[in-house]
Image (cartoon, rainbow, N blue to C red; front, top):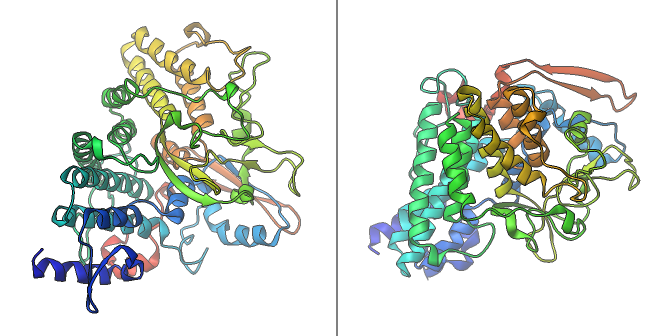
Length: 495
């Protein structure tokens, strides 16, 4: 490695504030610390490019408070009261939710993904210079590309209009920064279409590299594989209303990995859809650390009555939806534990680390069955081809057969639905049941499904009096506000 490269690396790591994490960096002298091997760069990949615990929480559940899946409660635990006061601004979709004048300064929705993108760019620019196995380097580059595509997907869905609303070639997205380095350049946001183009390009590039070098992939569930990126492409194309490609990429994964966790034959006290002991569904896990008492995850915002009622729809007589019971498989209702009977639910979906409690999201095979089913129904609504409707229903029945008490569950048939609209509504209910409180799915789905009106009732702490707040249909607040501290540094971001 030449001196210019060493200097660039040194300055870069100083700028990123990375020296404090230098236990894996080779110390050359008192004035020069730099990575030198593939093993060094892999540690950088894991700590700077992959989500940490806080970023994982944001990417899994950050937007749940904006959705119709939550409601407000009166609580008496001081920590819950404090959280309720702080997050009130988010619950009512206030434009000051991320600023000192509202909920308090919080740049995490904007800054956290960009910090991870910076780590991805670092890997992409420097890993080839490291000493070590070429295949290992190739797979790490593939991971970095796929991760970067994932982060930009999150950012454009936080801060841009949905791809299928208006003209994505004109709608404002987020800035695309594809190189490392410290710069005062005031980036101009790219369009929503440009962001999606880059997302697709990154995921495809990542797939090529990871597939070609898969013999060197990590066995860890929270590390990307080529099929993880294929799965993400199915999600991306679904959001773009590109039904054929959403189906094709779901097919690509499900032809190779089609397993679903059978809830009826699995103990809900010891496993989950993102659990080490039952990894059958996991395509990629985004972890967030908690402990055994993390049932406070949602309080004072708890699952809405509307969401709870969705679990009693579409059931055969005597059947039980096992996603709504005590345990960690999906989420369970506890009516007698603690001081909050009947007003909160446990929504943990797995445990990836031994001896520690982890609340997980990411992407799994269940989502691909849902993506493919919805895409086939959308095609059926145009073509009238019943084979597409039957394919969709087959996928939904396959998923449901693993979610209910198998002794009484029966497959749905097409004659149970009056028309394509009823079939689509059934599919979307299944999606909501399956993916709640995971991967920001509900907020993103509401956006791409027409940005419907949402009503939240905020309960006063002193008297329990409820005040109603409304997010109107196609409300501009379906796009999150960029924090003032960010726009002050870059006025180009003001809207």
